[in-house]
Image (cartoon, rainbow, N blue to C red; front, side, top):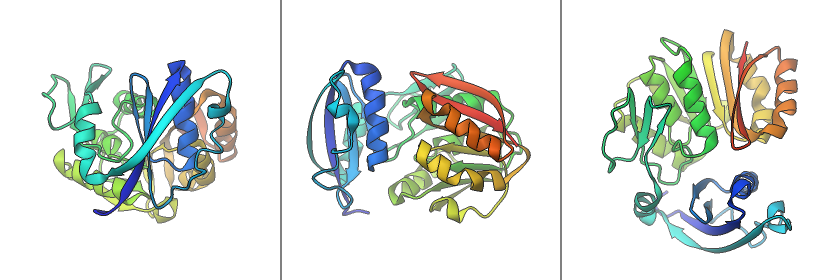
Length: 277
């Protein structure tokens, strides 16, 4: 990975909301891996070896008359990434109980303190979906629960699950950079019960009391049957990475798999749903 180059796109968006949320969702479907929301819009990153000149052709919001969006792009070497995050990554506190911060931030007086060096991985807590997943974990019992964090990104949700008493925990991501970053963050937070695995849903071998899947609608729909099959009786399934308008589709698929809807969280039109097996 040391020689991997990313393409960085710098978007200016008017109006900012919900423009940025829509843009990030569409870019995610197109293959962009990581995002930083800025005061003017968003920065998005994609690996150069999967990039092509027409990568933005299917991004519908760029063609919408409701938004004014301009952008520039350039090659970004991973060796410059730490400096980029130090400039852009601000600490957050969720429900006054869980702080997510970088190593260079001052420690917060919260029950849970998570140190993340995100690099190219998704999942700092800033994005609505990760924020809501943290809320779910904070309000539910994880003591001695077996957990799967699917699409783990930085590993932040798996780390919080361990801090809440879960064990053992599998954290899976198909992206090599996320896999390596999760390993670093798991070690950085002195976690002892998390196994980080590189791969997609096909590498799932165990059954779990809790499954956390913060990915995107298409992947969730594709892999839902796998999640249902490896969820223990009375197990909890937390899903996020999609919009409010996607709820009927997600609910219908879960109901077909005998999963019972229990709770919805919503943040800026992004949603997170809880189901029980």
